[in-house]
Amino acid sequence: MKKRTVVLAGAVGIVGGLGYLLTRKNGQKPGEAEASDDNGKGASMRRQSAEDKRIDSQQESAPHMESSERHEVLDDRGTDQAEASQILCQVRDGAFEGSDEKLALALGRPPEEIEQWTHGAGDIDGDVVLKARALANLRGLELGSETRA
Image (cartoon, rainbow, N blue to C red):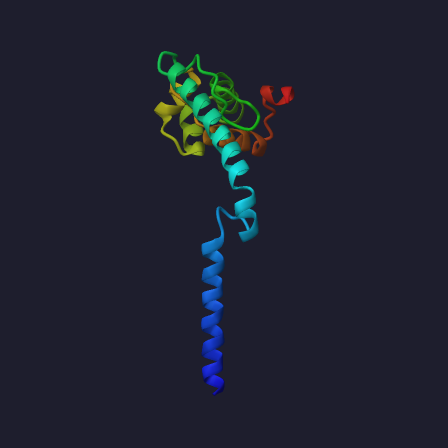
Protein backbone atom coordinates (compact mmCIF):
# COMPACT_ATOMS: atom_id res chain seq x y z
CA MET A 1 0.00 0.00 0.00
CA LYS A 2 2.81 2.45 0.91
CA LYS A 3 4.70 1.63 -2.27
CA ARG A 4 1.61 2.29 -4.37
CA THR A 5 1.03 5.65 -2.67
CA VAL A 6 4.62 6.74 -3.27
CA VAL A 7 4.45 5.79 -6.94
CA LEU A 8 1.11 7.58 -7.33
CA ALA A 9 2.44 10.73 -5.62
CA GLY A 10 5.50 10.68 -7.86
CA ALA A 11 3.36 10.35 -10.97
CA VAL A 12 1.15 13.23 -9.86
CA GLY A 13 4.25 15.36 -9.29
CA ILE A 14 5.63 14.60 -12.73
CA VAL A 15 2.29 15.34 -14.41
CA GLY A 16 1.97 18.59 -12.47
CA GLY A 17 5.47 19.67 -13.47
CA LEU A 18 4.83 18.90 -17.12
CA GLY A 19 1.55 20.76 -16.97
CA TYR A 20 3.28 23.79 -15.51
CA LEU A 21 5.96 23.76 -18.23
CA LEU A 22 3.37 23.44 -20.98
CA THR A 23 1.36 26.44 -19.73
CA ARG A 24 4.37 28.77 -19.49
CA LYS A 25 5.13 31.06 -22.43
CA ASN A 26 8.63 32.46 -22.88
CA GLY A 27 9.52 32.27 -19.21
CA GLN A 28 6.28 33.90 -18.01
CA LYS A 29 4.09 32.58 -15.24
CA PRO A 30 0.79 31.06 -16.40
CA GLY A 31 -1.35 34.06 -15.37
CA GLU A 32 0.99 36.59 -17.00
CA ALA A 33 0.98 34.97 -20.44
CA GLU A 34 -2.49 36.15 -21.46
CA ALA A 35 -2.22 39.62 -19.91
CA SER A 36 1.05 40.66 -21.50
CA ASP A 37 0.70 38.75 -24.76
CA ASP A 38 -0.30 41.75 -26.88
CA ASN A 39 1.99 44.32 -25.25
CA GLY A 40 5.01 42.06 -25.00
CA LYS A 41 4.86 40.89 -28.60
CA GLY A 42 4.44 44.40 -29.98
CA ALA A 43 7.33 45.87 -28.02
CA SER A 44 9.58 42.93 -28.78
CA MET A 45 8.72 43.08 -32.49
CA ARG A 46 9.50 46.83 -32.55
CA ARG A 47 12.86 46.24 -30.84
CA GLN A 48 13.71 43.41 -33.20
CA SER A 49 12.70 45.47 -36.23
CA ALA A 50 14.87 48.41 -35.13
CA GLU A 51 17.81 46.09 -34.53
CA ASP A 52 17.34 44.46 -37.94
CA LYS A 53 17.34 47.87 -39.63
CA ARG A 54 20.51 48.91 -37.76
CA ILE A 55 22.29 45.68 -38.70
CA ASP A 56 21.16 45.98 -42.33
CA SER A 57 22.46 49.53 -42.59
CA GLN A 58 25.82 48.48 -41.12
CA GLN A 59 26.09 45.59 -43.56
CA GLU A 60 25.26 47.84 -46.51
CA SER A 61 27.93 50.37 -45.58
CA ALA A 62 30.65 47.85 -44.67
CA PRO A 63 31.46 46.27 -48.08
CA HIS A 64 32.57 49.47 -49.81
CA MET A 65 34.68 50.67 -46.87
CA GLU A 66 38.29 49.70 -46.31
CA SER A 67 39.04 47.87 -43.05
CA SER A 68 41.05 50.85 -41.80
CA GLU A 69 38.09 53.17 -42.43
CA ARG A 70 35.64 51.15 -40.34
CA HIS A 71 35.29 52.27 -36.76
CA GLU A 72 34.27 48.92 -35.36
CA VAL A 73 34.44 48.89 -31.57
CA LEU A 74 36.53 45.96 -30.38
CA ASP A 75 36.09 46.13 -26.62
CA ASP A 76 34.19 47.79 -23.79
CA ARG A 77 36.60 50.74 -23.85
CA GLY A 78 35.59 51.74 -27.36
CA THR A 79 38.87 50.70 -28.98
CA ASP A 80 38.78 50.73 -32.78
CA GLN A 81 41.19 49.18 -35.30
CA ALA A 82 43.61 52.14 -35.32
CA GLU A 83 43.85 52.26 -31.53
CA ALA A 84 44.26 48.47 -31.38
CA SER A 85 47.18 48.70 -33.80
CA GLN A 86 48.78 51.41 -31.62
CA ILE A 87 48.31 49.27 -28.51
CA LEU A 88 49.99 46.30 -30.20
CA CYS A 89 52.92 48.52 -31.28
CA GLN A 90 53.28 49.91 -27.76
CA VAL A 91 53.22 46.43 -26.19
CA ARG A 92 55.64 45.04 -28.80
CA ASP A 93 58.09 47.92 -28.40
CA GLY A 94 57.81 48.33 -24.64
CA ALA A 95 57.55 44.76 -23.44
CA PHE A 96 58.95 42.55 -26.22
CA GLU A 97 62.02 44.45 -27.39
CA GLY A 98 60.29 45.47 -30.64
CA SER A 99 60.04 41.85 -31.77
CA ASP A 100 56.96 40.76 -33.71
CA GLU A 101 57.97 37.13 -33.13
CA LYS A 102 58.05 37.48 -29.33
CA LEU A 103 54.70 39.30 -29.29
CA ALA A 104 53.23 36.67 -31.62
CA LEU A 105 54.38 33.92 -29.28
CA ALA A 106 52.87 35.70 -26.26
CA LEU A 107 49.56 36.27 -28.06
CA GLY A 108 49.45 32.82 -29.62
CA ARG A 109 49.28 34.20 -33.16
CA PRO A 110 51.53 33.84 -36.22
CA PRO A 111 54.25 36.52 -36.58
CA GLU A 112 52.94 37.44 -40.05
CA GLU A 113 49.60 38.39 -38.53
CA ILE A 114 51.28 40.57 -35.89
CA GLU A 115 53.34 42.27 -38.59
CA GLN A 116 50.19 43.03 -40.60
CA TRP A 117 48.36 44.41 -37.57
CA THR A 118 51.20 46.64 -36.44
CA HIS A 119 51.41 48.10 -39.95
CA GLY A 120 47.67 48.86 -39.98
CA ALA A 121 46.59 46.02 -42.25
CA GLY A 122 44.19 43.21 -41.40
CA ASP A 123 41.42 43.15 -38.84
CA ILE A 124 42.39 42.89 -35.19
CA ASP A 125 39.84 41.11 -33.02
CA GLY A 126 38.80 42.01 -29.49
CA ASP A 127 40.51 38.95 -28.02
CA VAL A 128 43.91 40.16 -29.20
CA VAL A 129 43.32 43.63 -27.73
CA LEU A 130 42.30 42.09 -24.41
CA LYS A 131 45.41 39.88 -24.34
CA ALA A 132 47.67 42.79 -25.33
CA ARG A 133 46.27 44.94 -22.50
CA ALA A 134 46.78 42.07 -20.05
CA LEU A 135 50.39 41.59 -21.21
CA ALA A 136 51.03 45.31 -20.82
CA ASN A 137 49.61 45.18 -17.32
CA LEU A 138 51.70 42.14 -16.37
CA ARG A 139 54.87 43.75 -17.71
CA GLY A 140 54.17 47.08 -15.96
CA LEU A 141 53.74 48.93 -19.25
CA GLU A 142 51.47 51.98 -19.23
CA LEU A 143 49.57 52.31 -22.50
CA GLY A 144 49.02 55.78 -23.96
CA SER A 145 45.36 55.12 -24.75
CA GLU A 146 44.66 54.16 -21.12
CA THR A 147 44.76 57.77 -19.95
CA ARG A 148 41.75 58.82 -22.05
CA ALA A 149 39.27 56.58 -20.20
